[in-house]
Image (cartoon, helix red, strand yellow):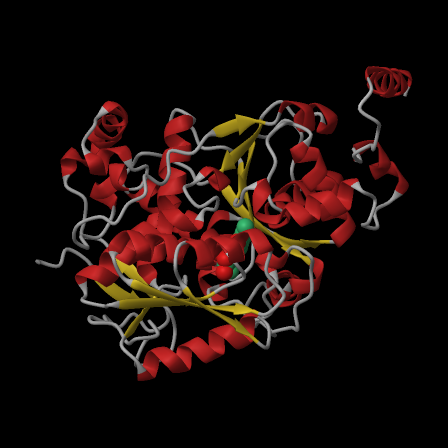
Length: 432
Ligand code: F0G
């Protein structure tokens, strides 16, 4: 197959094809990124073509990733579960409470396996299969493992996943098992899983599909093509993402940069990142030295998806913060829990890590860094059902939050099978 793209090191700029098994530059050790050829002049009309594909029945057109294939590297026959094409919701009641008229949620939890990982995995698995791998592998806090397992099954490849024992939400573990992955529960945290897997891929012919794999980033960047299409190609003022390993912020930044280079948008939204306080090495580095140097931490948070102390893609993320004028902050466990319940109360719901976006927005509004009249899109990265335990603990009152959050709790009530008992409950709620 003719290659239409290059892999270039983000540090020293060296071109690396084929890449090393761990996708780090063989000269300076930095990460690689895909560089696409220059767009032809007809690229101006691509957005129309992409929209027309939404009514097409051709397999690749029905994917919300491959619909944008002019902006993707050529990697062979797509391995697709019809990912992407996710909704953009107006968050009416959160917006009202915050005094905002333009607050949106791009819900990437509405992907086939319930998280944004699918948009990247479709490209990574297509590339891995074309490259001849029989097995693919990842280290994961849960969502990546579910997505790898599903897409490997779809591609007819084996999936090896390394997850930290006892530290991932059971919904995600159930997915990996059900989709047939070889699932290793590693004694250690995510950072230990990543270190172990890097050693494995240097010794065995398995394709690494963690987000250091630059093909993952290519798929994930399509979320902002779709978002801009949904907004009529008018960029919002801000895009807010939760940060763990920091690839998603990088992908969103890359997508925006490419859109501006091709003239589909003329200004970049500020892309900002929110981390959980107990897993916030980038927020600390951003505050201390604008991200010149990051000190890994031992990560601790109930938002297990972003429980990462040594994020692989932090340099790419820093570049996006600097280029778009964004910010990076950390939010407490209590702020996270409340924000998650508020998104749930809209009838939308998301997993804890995703709710970091709303918790962060509230901090920025308080500081005046985001203004109420600005337009904000929060990227919700995972589905509520991924971590049902978290929601149950919150509503049953088994999670510490301040008194003001009590209004959000909806604990189940035990009653006899009796209409009068139900009516009494209705009356009680009506009086409250
Ligand atoms: N939100 C959710 C629901 C996630 O699963 C993750 C990462 C993130 C946010 C952070 O994205 O790493 O690109 O900064 N989950 C990975 C996993 C690490 O293994 O599933 P990021």
